[in-house]
Length: 258
Image (cartoon, rainbow, N blue to C red; front, top):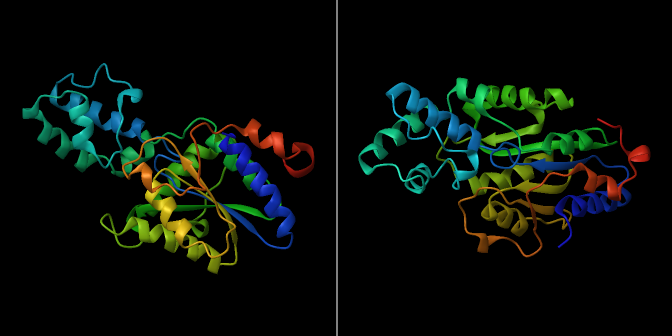
């Protein structure tokens, strides 16, 4: 299968030719798409060890976390934690995982993703939008975290290009992914690609794409929805390789190097 970043580059080139007078937008999800939340999960679990003088997670690495942060019970069972300790670990995680301190200190981007975002931010008439299921109440912390992660790559994220879930933690995330696409389209952007880790989000956007212009890219990292929900036309991958974009688009003509 063709590398997903090369597929994105080819699609972007076609869209540039087709919509020369329009502002193009590539949209990314945040959690487990831009940011590898396994680092956050491990950070919070190790803070449990420090606080309670235990060593459940001392020898655990991020590669051993094989479920999303929303499935803490599954993560604990995978790590063979004693049943008597499961509830207090889960409660600790629920209390601390989305605190301002953890968002600032423990959120880490996937290798290469900021280079890819910077590349698109450097192209003419092209912007990067963020469409996340995170609630509005952590908007400021989210932007601080993203901009901290992107600073060394000259990547900047702004309020006007960030769509968040307006209904709190328990809102219908799938529906709001579709609403996010619609929000940016109504602002005048030609949405040409959407990157997300959840198959059900990609499926919903596919079913509501009236333009046929949106390339669906599955970040094959950690996800909780069924893979069978993946749209047939979605392209899957997990390595953000800027070299694959350069294979398609001549850097010296179209890009301002990061």
